[in-house]
Length: 137
Image 1 (tube, helix red, strand yellow):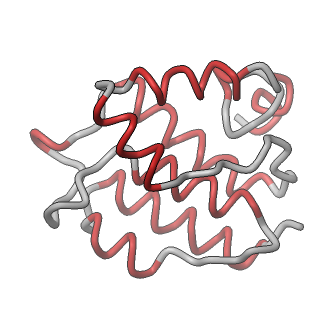
Image 2 (cartoon, one colour):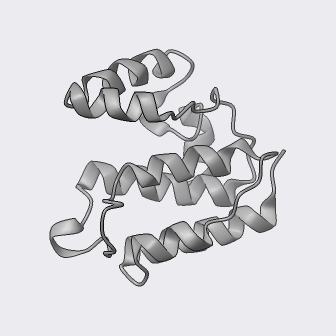
């Protein structure tokens, strides 16, 4: 179920994070949660993987995302504003997977992403299909 009000808040916070006007900690504190809208949880986990949670910082300077990561985060903003249902399998982040990914220098996470990608066009995630993404660009 799409929660438009919470998605609007989430999109605004993500845009502010990308613009460098709020810190990662402010993003975490204010990001809305809604168990009925899986896009919010999936995008929160996606964004979390692109900053350090060990210190407060903005996504600027040495902490700026790569061009690829920035494009992904911008797609997340676009998706939050699209009104589309989130059609990917829900992410299953666990402490075990996080530790395993660290211990394998990201190999475990990449393997999981390959399995995940078999469900749709991973190049336009969180959109499931490229045509859905192109419709909202």
